[in-house]
Image (cartoon, rainbow, N blue to C red; front, side, top):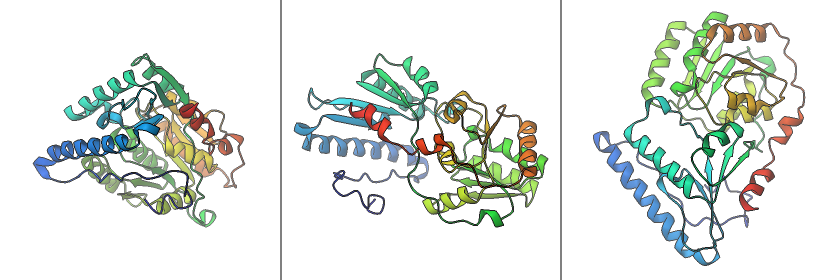
Length: 319
């Protein structure tokens, strides 16, 4: 936390740091996580009480475990909804379904709901009478680490959490079909899906490099900088993608499935191709096209430079 807030002195004050939820515990893990969630809520309430007299805006995120702040009448509650359609929508556990109901309840009680993109606004608008505002997902202001991408063999990159809805199986099939090197990097959720994809990759051979696990910001940036093309083969996804935002900001070549939220987010970005979600043959054809293209330094893009701006999002919270 101290490293990530360096240079922000005076911009904010850290009241408390919540301890991570326990990720182990065997059969008792759900109980431990419920206890941790209750402890988180208690810590937040105690800190809210300390600053109640001066509190004007409460910004809520991942609110299934917090709820609305009602300390005094002047507090405006602004709720961020990052994923209107959960990643696990097709296989949600009972706990996730309860959290989903809670999030919708909090959305109905909030004064304002902020989402990324008009696609999500249309979804959330059906939940709540609250004011629903759509903004573009801001980019990352950090520079990428130095990389020697010009001297490396070209490879496609699937980056970020490895989930069933992210279409990793489609990318593996397409890479095998096109004979194009593929790197898959990120934390598997759930672990069983990561194991399944590793087994599938082993059947393809050295063409695929699976780097499953947590990525540091440096490793994340280095892979992004060295990749020839960024793949987003998502099967279901209603949000705007942080990977897509960062890739466009860095002016990378991108291949993405044609889900409405991703098409909307890409806008008029000129270095992106779309294919029908789940169509590995269409993705393979685009990989072949990428392999035959001459590698050139990406052109600058007004969209990419605009994506690093946070002022529009901040305006929606505090105005």
